[in-house]
Length: 386
Image (cartoon, rainbow, N blue to C red; front, side, top):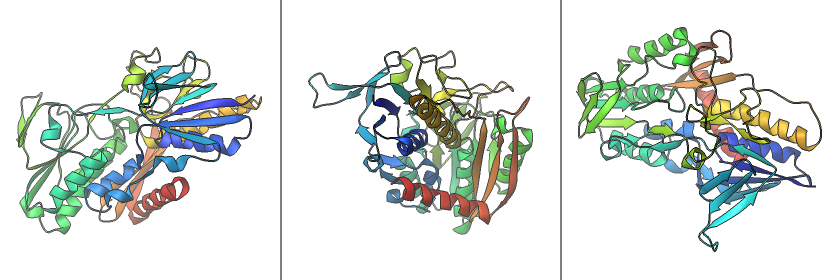
């Protein structure tokens, strides 16, 4: 009898899950991939978009192109999720009750985070985690003649821990290449005590040094409390002025998930950290929507590389179950990250985040090679999937 796998979300984790399962699909397997957006944005490219290294149409593909080879794509907003019965309801204007329901034998939840804007930041700045925000920031940057530029992290957690630091360094390179360094002050404000703290003090210190060596002013442990035109106010009582503002949005668990029993005390889905299984049989969760505590007391960072490897593990194990085999895999906490520095250079860090008692993460010598490796991966992603 054919088995149906419901894959919720067509971000990195959902795409890899569906495609890996499709390699093993036959008459025994049907894969349904759900996604609310037709424009499938490759998030790492947004950093290049915000400084004019990409055009908007270069950073996304059409989600419908993921269909085929055993994969059915459903575009629509997921409104209800029933993990106990492995079913979902999707908003459908053409349906009599406004919803269409789907039942499966397995479910893989890869919905990522729900992004919100707080403190009226959207009235004053640009959310560079979105296609629209990165595009609008670039338009302002192209016309910038000098002044104060702020890169702001208003709340924790946020996905891609390196992104704000990359954004600040890419903006600095743009300003320097335009001959505006003497007229411009670039600052980065974050509630974090340091960059990418989960990766350890050595790597955190190295990233901070990279940022400050470029003349960027770094303000850790600055928690935003209010925003107005040209002014940011923080919980330590300090204020700062800005002329151009780029910010990360607030990240929270998607509404459809928060209404279910999948949510743990963390406010996210808590899974078996090696198999990504939830407390519901045959229901898995991967990527940014999960909370996986590490031995050091902090959670595994929200990053696409982990969603990718977790997806490969889950897809393999579901196929093993369907075909009555037992050669199961485990996700081991390995992960890597590029760190764009501007002017064609990038750093590269990677290691085992499940390391005991601390993650074992090292950074390679920054250079042109790592930047072009990231460019190659971007092109490979679009060529392979879109």
